[in-house]
Amino acid sequence: MIEFRSVTKVFPNGVRAVDELTLTVGEGETLVLLGTSGSGKTTTMKMVNRLIEPTRGSICIDGLDVMEQDPISLRRSIGYAIQHIGLFPHMSVAENIAVVPRLLQWDRERVDKRIDELVSMVGLNPKRFRMRYPNELSGGQRQRIGVARALAADPPIVLMDEPFGALDPITRDQLQNEFLELESEIQKTIIFVTHDVFEAVKMGDRIALLDQGKLQQLATPAELVESPANEFVEEFLGQHRFQLALLTRTIGSVTTAAQTDLTPPAEKPGTCLHPRHSLIEALDLFKRTRAVKLPVYRSDRYVGELSKKGLLRVITDVLGETEDAA
Amino acid sequence: MSLLHEFLEKLGSDIARHTYEHVCLTSAAMVIATALALPLGVYLTRCRYPRLVALILGVANVVQTVPSLALIAFIVLVFALVKLPTIGMLPAVVALVLYALLPILRNTYTGIRQVDANTIEVARGMGMTSAQILFKVELPLSLPVIMAGLRISTVWTIGVACLCTLVGGGGLGDLIMRGLRSIQLDYMLAGTIPAAFLAIIFDWILGALEKALTPRGMRE
Image (cartoon, rainbow over all chains, first blue to last red):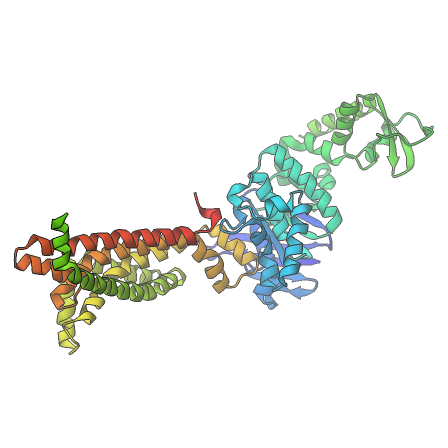
């Protein structure tokens, strides 16, 4: 658990990058720090591993103030991944991943095993990629290795600074999905910095929206989109409200209105919806299957049925609401 | 063919001896200059006082602008004042060292400074100590630039070492001066051609070394 208590950072040039920030990141939670450049999101993240030190206030990890810990061992215990240039160009994939394990003086065999494990975990073939150098990798492959390197010593906390920035939209989307899947298996406490509101909604358990160093709203993606705390948040979401609502609203929250039939089919069909699916995912499934109606199951329990017409009606309603709000 | 044969018969042993002296002078100067300039260059990248950095780089620049002949003359003068030997290897090597310093110093400093700040921050963020960042990240990444400084410096020093003859430092300059005094072309060539070859050979060796030391990920 990471606790920020009234953390303030004033740089020597007088810029107040972070102003009285108080928030808690729970065990295993992914907290997204969202904001424009200059909002203080990166500064906030860098104060966790003391790359930047707070002017006032305290940051505690599991109750221990980071300022009272040795910065070197603190940093080795926290994963760190940043945008494209993160890999060391003079080191191979294997050497890049091995940096922190070697600093921690793992024995050679254990490091070797870990490299293979991580390279395959991020979806690459260890035999083919171990000895490659960053300049022999595509942008997406580099980013994957960057993530693998951050996880190398199996740290409980991982800091990620726009790890999927500087990628084309398709690769980025793919990497985000893979990371979500990976993350659900490894259960890390993650602080994720981004300026992209869609990425924030997709990746975050909760989002902390910052502006000029001040916390504007701390909420789940759905709460943030449904009920912006103030004018700034509303403006920040701006014309994306409708698209965001399609991402954050789930079938579960609308099916009571849209479901038509409660008689369960004889057995669970291959394609079905889950109440947790977002409206956009449901729409996608209708598009792919060309179905007119799809059953909704919560694991093995039948909870109803959603028709394409019903879904489209809900989407039209959402469009109306968000237009009213704007 | 017989001309070359005659030339080598007459001057072969002289050429060998003076080339050997020349190599000794140059190597001694390069080893000492590198031992001084490399750590100093690293220090300058870590120095908290920008004025001190500017001062040291400035002084090194000024030394470079002094004509090499004048530099040797000044050193003899200073050595005379402090009662050090004014003739022989010592003043010669000191002059060469002063001359060889700047390219190594400047390239070490700029080489390390041009390493991407993000890369260094990542290294810090991963928990490397300052020394680990230097040896595992900054030096490997600035190696091509540092090696380029060493090459320039070596080629210059081989040329300037021809002047060491003026203070009795030996080297191929002896042959050139002998040729000058007696107006004999063969002596001049016996000094000049090996000096030129030395420069080419040393440049080639250092180039090969640079290539061997550059990690695969940084080769073009």
